[in-house]
Length: 429
Length: 90
Image 1 (spheres, rainbow over the protein chains, first blue to last red):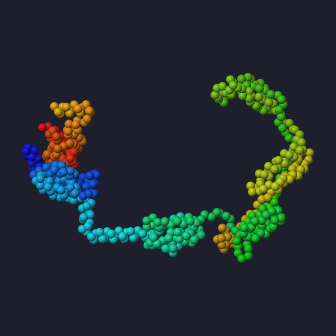
Image 2: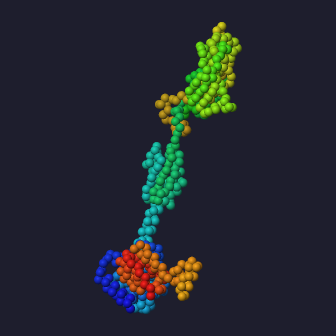
Image 3: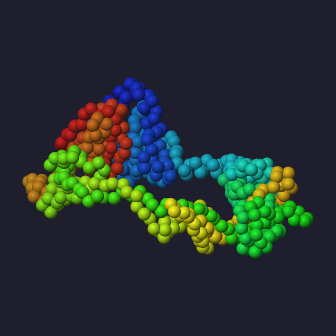
């Protein structure tokens, strides 16, 4: 009984204070942070119940005992509010009677109530469905076209070809054949080597990759770049002017590019036997440095780059050569890191004129000549043989080295600009 | 006598006292909330005072803006500005 009295006192005090209005409203509505319980309550449907009566706490206790999930209990203006699930609320009547309370739903939340609301509005459902259908239908059309990767071919030209093939703003995506569209654009522009058409939502993207042509000289005739005897003639286009076995001079026409009925430009390969000539001279005597046989030895200690002579050197030769021999200490080259001990030998030398035999001089001259020619040969030239002619006098020998090679002698001599005009696309490919 | 025996048994077997003696367990989270486990129902509720029945008496939670966040068969969760928690044994 005391407890009951206390409840009444507390409630009347609460009614008088009327503080924390905002908090009270929130509590009444059950607005709190979303928890898992509220999420489940939202999915299954939950109700906010106001209980009026003598023993609202008893109703809560009865609900709990009956296995009702009850949450967010709040007392506002002598009324007790709590939340429970929709399914359980249907069983609350007998419990309320037992507790002598009157429960009333003040708020309904959750998907079941939302569905119920929507079902009462058929026009809303109809319009929503209609909007969805319109949206889906519109998203199946092309509303923008983008062209990427073109620099030589203009965007408008590509769009025009695409338009002719059916790709235009408003076109249905499902009615477009991407392979045929790609093929149509690739065929229409010879400068385009690859086309890819794709859709990003309602945006059609045409990606093109343009051809990159190598920088070749313009059409012309093929002429000889050096003298030679023609060995083979291979004509890819144009008219051959020379035959194998003919002798040609530098600048001679080898393949004519112009033919009757059109201008094409010469292409082909002409190999010819050519020669390289070098004259080398080799003296029959030469100044040589020779050792006289006299030498001096000195022991040197080198510590980190600084050298110390262990014995005085005395008077040094006027001209000399040096040789050094390391001294091993305890079987090792360097006993201590950075410290070296070695013998330095000075050999006296003098310059002398020495006779060179003719054969030796000729051999040296030939070798020198061969080296000189080999350094001049182009990489494509195939070396056949060397011939040597020797002459000379009492002081030196002269050797004329001639190398015969087979190599490509044709080079393209482009025509002047006015002749090149009107050449078709295919000619230069 | 029986309670003493059960206490001794719980101590020997190292069992939690609240389970073996059917006692309430009260968890106070700062001044933000109180969790009372193993309760016997709500006795009194107001914004300043909540009385919860437990096996051997009552637990009184006093404070401001008190709300019962959840009532289950096992536990009561009280939230608000907690000032005072009292255990009254019968």
